[in-house]
Image (tube, rainbow, N blue to C red; front, side, top):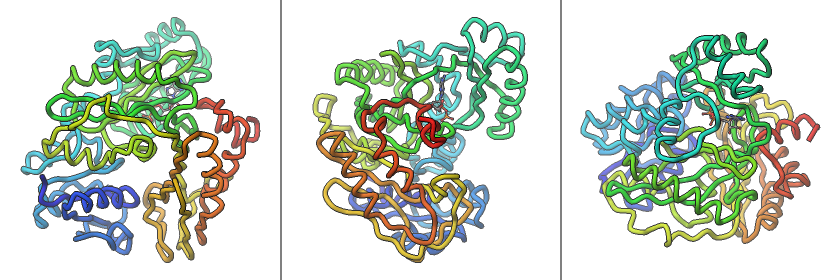
Length: 447
Ligand code: ADP
């Protein structure tokens, strides 16, 4: 097992990883920018190192500063959390070149899945169905036009190196296609340094359903069930559930068997998530994330498995020690991503938290680095808390969610809690009848 783990992240996820380290008896090192000197992940750390000024590119993305911090503190492994360097294959290689362990998949797998076209090709070759579209880069308009008329409009243009819901363009007809293609390529180049794009049929009412997997070095692969992440705004998830209200246990088992077999045959290891669109009873793969996901707690909640602990154990070479049949799914879990934003306009709301009172009671978990007096700066992601509830049925989980939101007090900054309270009351949500387009309409008052 590791002697000391450096956590290359901030906020709630740095705390989350710190908690797993502490329970395993492993000291950890926090890193922080000057803007985060008083942050909770630093205050609770065993040790901390300042790695640069506020802009992420000079601190949390500063690979040299992070590796130096690991070296001077004697860390022998690095956990990247999510975001920042978590899907950066070069960073994972640098970590290994310095004789440290990267807590995550191999650089080769990070690179393979980081190219979304390559990821689709690999999954297709292993019998996983795809969203209809191209499995090669589409750079010329004529080719795009040919493919789009084959697929039928609307089509979605996506960046091969894309992520975070950015760089996607819908073209509703042939007239729009050329302009959208140019725009998508320019955005991809500016956002990801790579202008390769591909085309997919734009589905009109899919659900986003993803499968959490864990794989050890000996080749054992299990899944922890599905998460339904269809409640999205601008292609970014806001609320996630485990399991999906749309899926039967038989469908889950069939998808799980196919996915774990595919991952075993490519030799994948550590945690990962395969994302699918689900419409009319069919699954279609869209991408794989080779890291811990923001929404991992809902899977932990229904399985009782600590995913971060498992990531650390797997990276240290330990065997999973259990098989698929040992994993039981209990009850229903819902997570809300509470952002420091106006709940109507979604304008960022940085500032000082004057008072803070998280909810409690049976089946309530809050993952947050907020405290009374903490400052939400404008430099980073606006996620400030994750509220996770668990109950034996979905209906009870929704009642618990509403009750927990009513208890949750964050004074001094605006948060999206009132939006989640409205969602919890909505008839569509209660009925589980929503797709990836529903929340935008709900927010606009047209759902
Ligand atoms: P990113 O990596 O940027 O998150 P994804 O490929 O995971 O992009 O897609 C993000 C979201 O965009 C999906 O959850 C879904 O809501 C929407 N989306 C992606 N592909 C399609 C598609 N072919 N049709 C309709 N919606 C899509």
